[in-house]
Image (cartoon, rainbow, N blue to C red):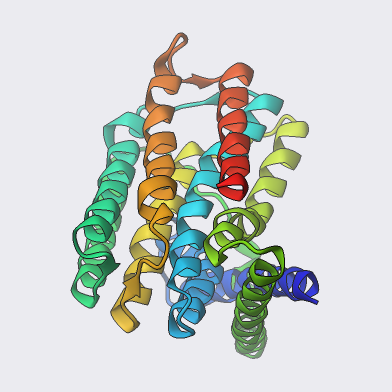
Length: 315
């Protein structure tokens, strides 16, 4: 039953996230929000909703390790699993914004998270506010930098949503909200039961199974695009997702319910892997061939992720 709860929970989170994205984009069009702002803010917030609901539900239920493991594991999976597999299938070009803005911002948020956890053993409400305010500043700078470009590629937006009726939009919001709530409940309950049954900690289940589960939609979309020889994925989107996971998911959760470390390995192992993989993609982007994630670089990232997952269970 534990595995069934986890699988049903993941399906509900995927469905809920999809409907929430549609409803949010449709609402933004009705409010005359520009396409660029929708892509950089509204879609990013909506796609972070499943992780937010899982982390919040876990924190409120007293399972802080699931809150932290969900985010840390998802960030490692985004770069190790999603970027790794996609690059193995088809090489990925890297633009200059990667090292000028996106990657430094991700490193700042990652190190800030480590600092907050290592100094107090928790993310307090004040630290949650700091993370969220940092996200607002990041978005402000991101939008300002994007306005300077003559041509802006904005992904994940369906222009047909401009014509969505108010009734349909409300239905989508209801389906999205209920699915996210139900999915987060089932996923947290299933993860706790499965961890007990396997004799491992909730942390192990959250940094592996839950993290992979919440990364599956992005992985599937990226692999399909790579196989079709279309633009595989935007590295900026993956980095942006990692920033949103830390700043919005943990930031908002901590503002509602402070997040405490229950397992020392989150601080001594998991978060160090997260920072290490995030740091490693910079030299990989430059050496030996600049601005390209080739197949063997993707293989390095994927093997790193397999090692991390194996050590999580063995540890």
